[in-house]
Length: 238
Length: 238
DNA sequence: TGTTTCAGTTTGGTATGACAAAAACGCAGA
DNA sequence: TCTGCGTTTTTGTCATACCAAACTGAAACA
Image 1 (cartoon, each protein chain N blue to C red):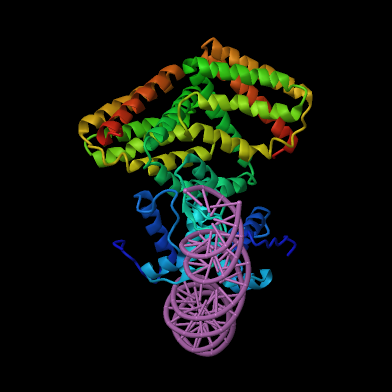
Image 2 (cartoon, helix red, strand yellow):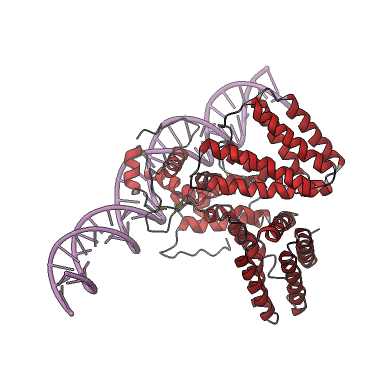
């Protein structure tokens, strides 16, 4: 064990363990997918009590570095953008409760998607265009069924996040829908709105087809600003 | 204690505690800034052992919901976008080690800042323009001192994140610089590059002054693409 | 009256031991 | 080779104990 073991009165043994494990996970000493050593083994090799080991493991799990299903050995998690999103989950949930929290995240989403439609208008390939067309068709087919329309609505937006070939973006989309959906799904869902949204999607799609980023951005912003108005009117944040 | 206490064989007592505390923190039963009850008190009110309580508290701390300095009572943390960023820290660090990880995050940054300069070109007010001008002047003054130039470089970009009045954005900027700086600061820093970057900043600023979002975006992309080339050439990701 | 000091009390950090129940393992049998 | 089943590990939890640091309040002091 070459890792230096700093034991100060003002540091916690568990914290040291956590950072040691973090290092070992990053540099590969603890291989991805493999389980951590048994608790008793860890306590012996570091000379700490089981209490400390358990606390450290719990912290690693909460941070998203290992997956600790009850009764199973904790396994080193595959590095992925999903783990990052998951790790912020509880904090973001709290953010959504503070005044203006939803608003700020929603604004960020608008900014993000505005950039995405511009990008799509400039660089979307045949396959992505086809997928958007399909999503649009699904929208239309689901106009009468608000529940299903919501799903196809999400799907349409998701395509936008898939156009740039960056694996982070789809995860961000997933995060947005997860986080904001609770403030979204409780909205009154009259078929009227479905039509409005469908037409908005159509305008966005058209602008992308015409390779007109400015029009695409405008259409997207109109669409999301309108959606935001709905959210705001429903919950009336002061 | 009205919270239902689910004790299944397949659930952990500590996990239940965590979710109970999460709820209580969000709904305000546990007030921000106030310390959690003493461990011994918690164990009595929930009828669990201290081991369980400690594990739960550690998990909450790792998630960023409470701040647990050694030897002090854990206090409920102020909800803020900084806590969210901090919570992902260790996961993101790991992401940066996987192939293409840095690239993906850097691309995301380019996309983000491209959107920001467009926004700045359209909506930047007098004060923001003034601040950018100041940052540019600081750039120039630091041309000979690569260490200081780096700081003023970061400061210039930060202004872009401050133009939209959204408190999330500055935090994102902070996160980017924290995460990517280790892959940035080790780059060779010849004064030559400082001049290149300074001129690039100048072009961006000009385009914003002229209220020309397209030119601003182009200038920004040129600037960051160039910066990325430097990073890539230095570390040669395959 | 405001401040400092100090002893007693609380409280977190850690270690140890114990036990039930689930998971992992190994071996015999099909 | 695959399947069951009993044995061994290993996790989840509890109880207890001790130390040292943080806290508290009262006494001493300026």
